[in-house]
Image (cartoon, rainbow over all chains, first blue to last red; front, side, top):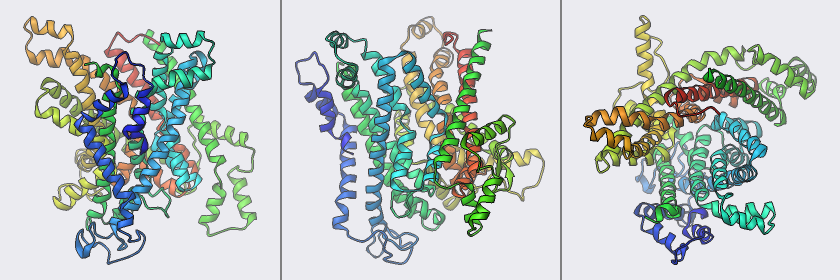
Length: 300
Length: 324
């Protein structure tokens, strides 16, 4: 989740050209923190991160161990969130599952970010037949229902953490590619790019050192949303039973307790709330980043 | 005439995309470890090498890759997508049997989301400080953040367990007797919860879009002109502004088709709706590759058809869109 912290966002904005005298990074941070939704989202996310990553040191029950009778209601016998269908502690499952959900969400988002930025950057920079070919390639991935496609990948190559992450990353980069391409199309006509080009800069330098840093703001916003949707994606896959059975994740807890919803709805509701709050926090931060990184809005 | 030409180009291009989908699927399956013969042998409880070899010959798996691909494509042209050994049925038959249920779910959910989303968006744009504006903002956040299967399960807990109003799943009650109308009503009754669940994701998106484009349109000169010449506010909203604000919603709705089918896979599983999604999950778990490929092919076909239809519809609605 590091890419949504203000430090990271500040790095990106530090590269932004600015006509104003105020340091752009400070200005951006100010924008971000004056947005109440974004601050709430950030606090929520930090709380969830603390819960999943520090929590297990305070609450040491093994999430796979059967500690009590099945379906103890939340609060009963000292089980804050109750027990699941095998009598395992749901609180521990939430902590362990959160680590997996977030790790998969983040790494899948990074994979699709790398693919999407590469495809979009080359398409937008070179134009012509390169753009045509790459955008057709992108369109091809938009025609296949992503979930169905990644279900097939996971089923064919086995349900391990690696294949699940790859399956999510490989199918969800198209939006990033489109955003990157349109930014590149806009920026490549700018005077400072022409100036760099007349200084006989090479293509690689122009793409990655001149244009990409300036194209970052919308890509950062998109990447942030990608983490959220990758978490949802992973949850859907594990809900359908297509995840590593030896690893606990939020979606998997929902999927495995689903047959008993009419008797013990809490075992399904609690992990759902965890996913909901996490993705909500991420999208609130995304809205805040969007406002803070958008120079048009800033001048208002 | 111009429209026909565009239609022709679109269809030709769609066919190329389909071909690419076929080839990719075929490559994917041949790269993956294990094949149908291994799966069948596994289902039989193990078999010796001789029998596995026999199965391979029967399914043509002993042929080189390009021969297999060619045979498959030759079949697809004749609408033969192979044979499902798991269901013991031709794949085309299997898929066509399940397709209507999925289309019904997808269409009704899209329709519900577009209509309610547009109405909400318009009302919210009209009244930026109103309650509805807050509702749209809330819906937009909720729709993105709530996992769709979880929404479905919560609806089941609420409307099946706590207030027993709706059935827990399925598409029809086989004990219901009567004519076409009674059966249709029964299906509609079963459709309510899955439809609302699937629509919830897109409702968020469309209402936000409708609000944004409505706000933009309401600031346009021609709206001010209409108001100035004394056109009643209701007409301004629903005749002048809405017509132009609904374009982005339709565009995005058309582009969402692949994503709606993904959503339908999950929703069908939650409500045991007998569509392509449940079939996909079953055949994936059974490693029934001919069926999986058939489903991928058909879903790509449906998505391409709807992309073309959306494109044509937009051109008909908005004459400003030029060819290209």
